[in-house]
Length: 316
Image (cartoon, rainbow, N blue to C red; front, side):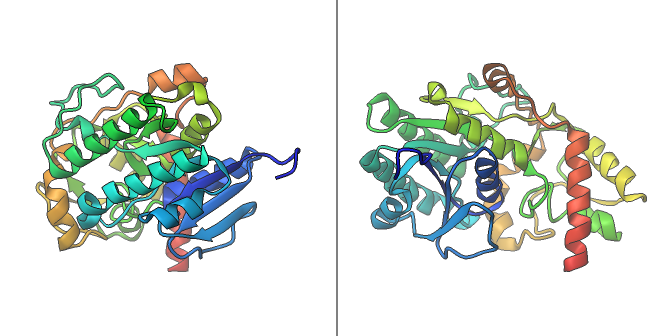
């Protein structure tokens, strides 16, 4: 690396969050490596694609070689998470420790567990009782312990359910927008009159990039910028207005297959269905105050998502 070269930022995982983050980092002027198991996919300006299996020590070390900052955005099949995500953590933590890179981890709200509608802040108790919630909480404890012990510099950015362009496998994604645009059945999960936070995928990317640029935020959990929660019914009404016709909303009062979510996925998701039977309200005001940013207004998010899905349907 020459004296004028900027430090390398490495994004692990090329799903919607990782891809959006890679683009955001390039926009901010950083050299970027985007890592997944195949190293393939559409060319992204300013992004080096790299193939590695970060569930292995060798793959993770190769992936983060030369990095100043690594971003863990890797996810795996829902039925594999409890088994595989701890292996990925072990390999990635050892790799960043070896190369001296900071680690920014994309995280979920799962560690909080059932909240009975209480607003989730960074100070909320971690009281998950589900398998996947306990797994995530255990991983997060280990990340923060690694930071406290000086083995690695780590920060966690938690997001609510994703929404936005390119987001297919979300409860507000491929099961909702295509059906809304084509007159199909739109699933109404659980109680759609309850408030439910959704995080714009571009806000996920911007929030993680900010954490990557601000080491003073290390050693703790942050909630990534997320618009104020409204009810799912209100969101469906916003979509209905934009598609120009009534939605055919079908109640889904309990976990069952729908849209892109098959029986295997929903069998695993059943323990998390409480997220649709009690309010899910995430407060990101601490992040917004600390870093001088704000979430994208929900109306703008819905506009962009409807437009993206309309174009996506034209290609498919």
